[in-house]
Structure formats: structure tokens, C-alpha cells
Length: 362
Image (cartoon, rainbow, N blue to C red; front, side, top):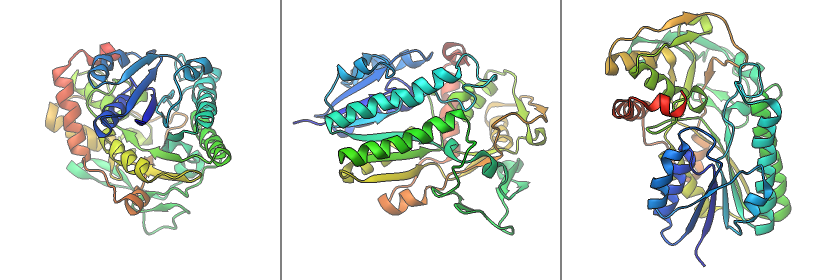
């Protein structure tokens, strides 16, 4: 029987990429995308998915009946989430606390229940924001000059490093003690529940804690990914500001292209075994500060002024670079796309689609 794969959030930026890659890797498989289409921009992926033979279903993971009516499947890929770390806060826009919990936690419980009945393997896409905010804000960092002359934070190797941190980045053993934000707490709770479901059902479980995913076609909102949002706003000459950390753009993130994530998932699915849990970082491993990104934008897209605001916002973190060494060791996987190549892809997309921010609500 042909493999059957369900991708939730399958019309989103990451989910749509995974659907296309699975369809190419498993030409005889039945790939189904389940998406509520509530996020502006997700409708732009419908036609492409259908051309690749992906069955697109309009539904909501918060409604168990929407999931149950589709099965059974051999694999469930959970790429549906409310992605903003500010969700459920006064700065989080229209997403309230209960809406966040209903979507990110209870929706995942619905998926885990269905997967257990189907005896399906589960892939849970998690996040770097499961790590402890106090531990992240206390990292031993030093400001230095980065690529293209922009300032950046780096780990200070001359100071004691906490468990799970090296100069290469944050490892999977880094602290996850609260507070991690309500968003991070829902994702961490999902990891724990998924492990319990998989243990009880004897089914495979893959948990990938992802860095910032970025590439062409990403919806132009800051909560969808700071790199895409920044480059699109720079190209459109819309206001940008360095917020916090002295207003210098020192804060650092790593970025990963979703095609590289798909490459890792294909390797993971190939060797997954029932009753076994794999938890790894799916991340770029190379950090870029906002100041460095801005220097790249100025060189590539021309001059644009960035204002500065020194205040620190809740949940702002100075440096988050996930170390993917464990994924490299286990699967021989490493990202093939450099940050600069990802930025170039986004910039080309911004030039081809100057209305992208308006279309996606950014």
C-alpha cells in the first residue's frame, strides 16, 4: 500500500514546502494538506500544491472531527501553529491566551489522538523558544564586529558557559525551565505529550526544534520570520527600527531554508522506528544580527534608514543560535544554503512581488 502522509498547516510557508518535497520523494504516496487558510497568504499555495498532486483539505486541527474524517495515515507532520512568541500578550495582536492554547496545544492533542488510533508516526515541528528566557537573557555574550562591518553579539569563550551552550550554539540539553513564554510553553507541553503518546502506542516520534525558517514566499509578517519581514520591508522602504539592546541591531538569530528542513525530515523518516523518540535541532547554525542583515540589505537593495529604540520588550532575546551538530552526527545532514543565499532568494522575491506585504498583512 502506498504511503499516506498528512501535513497540517500544509498551505503555510513551511508546510507547503514539505508537501511538495514529500510528493517528489514519494511519487506513489498520498499526500494530504490540512489547513484552515485563516492566515493571509496561505491561499497563494493552493494551486501549486494541487499541481504536485497534493490533496488540499480545508479544516481546523482544533476540530477533532476535521482530522478524524481524513484518516488513516502512516505519518502525521504537525506544521500547524500560531507562531508568535507574543501571542497571548497585550502586544500579541488579536491572538488571545485561550486561542493560542487551543491551537498550539489542544489542536496537537487532537492530532496525537488520531495518530495513536492510526498507529501513525508523528513529526512535531517545535521551536527554539522552548528554552528558558532567564537562561537565554543571561548568556555570556560580548559585542563585536561581524560580517560586513555590522555589530553583533557572540558567545564569550572566556567566561563560564552554562550546560548546553558552546561557541557553536545552543544544544538540545539547554535549560527549558519556565518562563519560556506562553507560546514556548505550549510547544514544550506538546513535546512532552507527544513523547507519552508515542511511548504508549509504540509509534515513531520525531521532534525537530527549528531555528528561524526563511526563504522566498514566506508570508511577510514579523511573527512568520524576522529575516523575510525585514528584507521585504527594506525593499518596500517601509519603516524599520532596531528595538532593544541599545538600539544597535545586535540581536542574533540563525536561519534555515525549509528545503533543508525537508532534507532532514526525509532522512529521519527513512530510519524512524516504532517506540523511538528523536529530538534534534533543525537549524542553520550560523547567526546573523539585525545590523549585519541591514548591512547586507543596504549593499543589495540600496540605502534605507533604520531608526533606533532602546527599550526592551517582553520576550526579546539577545542571541539564539541553535547548534545542529547532533543532526549532523546522526544523519550526516547539514544545511546546504548559507544565510546570504537565503537573503538573496528573499530579495529577488521582494523585487518580483512588490505588493507582497500588503497581500500577506505585513
